Every structure is written in structure tokens, then in C-alpha cells.
Length: 445
Ligand SMILES: Cc1ncc(COP(=O)(O)O)c(C=O)c1O
Image 1: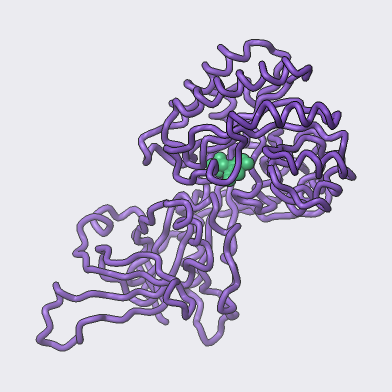
Image 2 (image 1 turned 90 degrees about the vertical axis):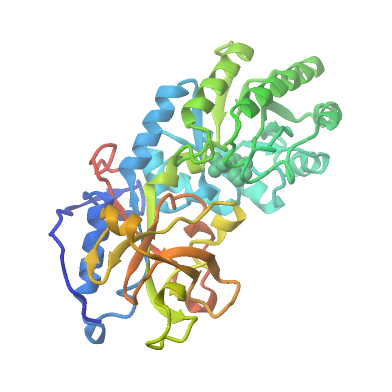
């Protein structure tokens, strides 16, 4: 496809970050916009007949400076609470390495996630196996690698841990109000109040070491008060455990902090103020270690996904007499529900595509193009042959042409980690940049 060009050449030097052992990743230094423009320029300048297959794949740009900024925000607003990044949210090795180099700890959900972390030189004391129902061989793996901190919320798990890892440091995950969250985790995990006493007494009888309490107010929590209420419940459970003879030393405040903006009517500042105050009031002793397991907070806003319009079908016959205003379009993109977008739906996140490249012109910042172009009723599909692969139905979009590119911001959390190869499509690759060149890049992490 021949495309008319209107690009400037951006500067995109590359630098490398390496972990102790293995992972090497090229990190560019341009802004997200510059990287997207460069990538689209390269694609547009390539003749399909001479190109490598896949040169025009969808891509995602991840900005480590954004991750760094989130980390600085956490440190400034919640200095007492140590973040243990929830790896499940975006396990990409470059992200994990970067956070490790900042000194962040890790919340792992499986043996595979546990395995990923020490490889980059993180001490097991900076890890928690925070899945209340664990596969026995995974618990054994944790034991062998000294990942001793782990959660439970039921009796069977206690017997399992007694058998496989009796010296583990156990954290009781309690049920708290998650009704305001985008994703309610309490439907699946968390010991209800009426079970707690018996759980703690059984743990004591089994001579297991319960060291703390954890909660999760749900992913994408929209009510700061939920954190304060959960801290109060945790305080009661500390008292219950201490009455049974345990010395409690750890409070784990889970995740749920939004990472992008206050789209849901809540900011990180709101959460930090309420949570920080509740912790200081109810757990004033510096002997209590306070941690949390933020996932989306760190990575959400750092990633922007770009997808190409690879197919189009007009629903009204395109005859000369047809009223163009009434036209409806089906668009087919080169990433979709079975790729990077599955969890937008499971997590109740709206899609809000922005036009990046139109008719050969880079229009990322063209306000007129974004806001004033006439729009048409459109359905947007992913690339597989499945009719479940639907991204948007009956939304108004500007008329798009084959070869146009659109982008979705805030794609760092729960996106590529859930992508499949359904229909043979590759998972979308990530291009990394560090737009402000801040943070611990290039220091042999
Ligand atoms: C145990 C646990 N901790 C932390 C998280 C991260 O949550 P979020 O990404 O909302 O911060 C999750 C998400 O599912 C989780 O299950």
C-alpha cells in the first residue's frame, strides 16, 4: 500500500537494561508519540511485496518513565507502605526488571511467576505468594526457593501447607467490601469474619506460623473508604490472632489502586490519603511491616496500544445514490479480543480508540481530526474468524480507511498477559522507551 508521508524524523536512541542473568531489552528514548510516529513511518515506507511478514503487526509502546513516575508518586504519598508489584498484571520481563531495580517487591500468583523473580536477583524476602489456593507442587517450589510469605483463607489450605511447607509465614486473607470495584475479588477469595476464629485456632493447633493479615478491596476500587474499612477489619483480626497467642507483624493492603486517571471518580491521592491515615491510626507501631500489592497502579498508563485497520465492510451498498451520512461500517483490526483486549471486557474497562494515522498522515495530536471529523455508526472487530472477537458495537467513529491506525491508551494492565495465539495470531509485541531517561536504566540491574 502506498501511503502519503508527512513525518518529521524523531530522535530515538536506544539504550539497554539488563538483569543480573538473562534479560536484555532495547529501551528507546523518545516520547510515546515519537515512537509511534517512527514505527508508523517505518511501516508506511515499507513495500508489502519486499517486507518481512508481520512488519505491519499491531504494536504497543511502553514508557518506563511513566512506571517510574508512578513509583515516585507511591513513595511520596504512601511512604510507610512497601509496594509488592502484582506480577499477574503485566509480567513482561522488562517491566519486572525495571520495578525490581527500583526496589519494589513482588506478589506472585503461581510457580511460574515465582520463578521469574529470583532470576533477576531479587531476594525471596521481597516476594509474597499471594494466591490463597495453591497447587501443592508450587508450594513445594516456594519452599525450595525460600519464598516463605504466603496467603491462605481456608482450612484445607492450612493442612496442605502443614504438609508441604510447615515453616511458611502465613498471611490470612480476609473478606472485605469490594462492591465498588471494577473486578470483585471477594466473590472468590477472602475468609468471612465468622470463619476467622476457627481458622486461626486450627493454624495454632497445627503449629503453623501466622504472621499477618491481607485484604484486597477489588481491582479498580472506586471507593477510598473501602480501604479504611478493610484496615479496621484487619485490626480486629490482629486482636483475635494475638488473643490466640500469635505475634502479628505484617499488614498487607492488597491492590486495587487505579493506575490511569480518575475516570472512575477516584484518584490515587484520595486512596493514599484515606489508606495512609487508617494505617497510621490503627497500626501506629513501626514494628508492623505494611505492604501492598498494586498491579494496575504501576503499569496502566505506561502502555499505548496501536492497531491497524486491515479490513472494512460498508453495510449499506455504496452506490452513488446512497446517502453517505447513513452509512454504517464494520472495521477489522489486527489485534482483538483474543489478543490484547480480552481483559478490557472481563475488567469492565471501556475502549476509547483515538485515531493516530489517517490517509497517510500522522494525526495523533490533530484535535480537529479527533473531535470534528464526521462520525458514522461503526462495529469494530478483531482479526480472528470468531464472531466473539468483537471490540465495539454501534459506536460512532470517524470514517477509517484501510491502512489507518488507531490507538488505545492505558493498556499496561491486564492486556498482553491474557493474549492468546487463537487463529495463529502472534501476541502483540511491546516497544519500550524511557521518555525522560529518568530512573535506573542502563545500570546493570
Ligand atoms: C491477590 C492479588 N493482589 C493484587 C492484585 C492486583 O490488583 P490491582 O491490579 O487491581 O492492583 C490482584 C489482582 O487480581 C490480586 O488477585
